[in-house]
Length: 152
Image 1 (cartoon, helix red, strand yellow):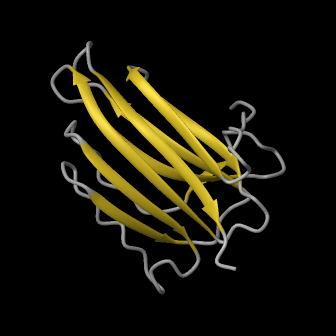
Image 2: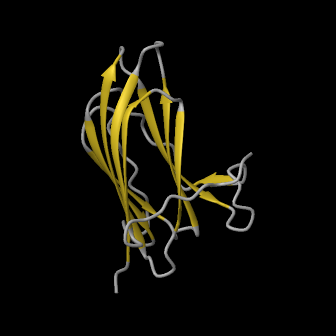
């Protein structure tokens, strides 16, 4: 367990990370959800760069806003399909009513996909990318964009 380090949102609502040649097994970006945000839009662009096909699994977490410790987290959704190393773009919508009453978490392992998770945005949101390396030299690159907005 470790204290959460928050990412800074550009202009208070938008965040972009470029992960070049990532070989670590897991990366979680933590955000304080803006008070007036109704939903969150996440864009993930993945490209495998070496090895036989690293498997990248995205997850969305909520953390205890009081302790702000990464040992006090829960998943916001059912398990998402892992990316199998194929270049693909994924769009995630998180927020109440983004799909009506049910989640739409159908995500392809090797093709562009859109996922909607019908949930109240937590005060502390984590975007986790976990790499399952099948050989020692696998790496991947990604662009991660996170945007909080309001319907007002």
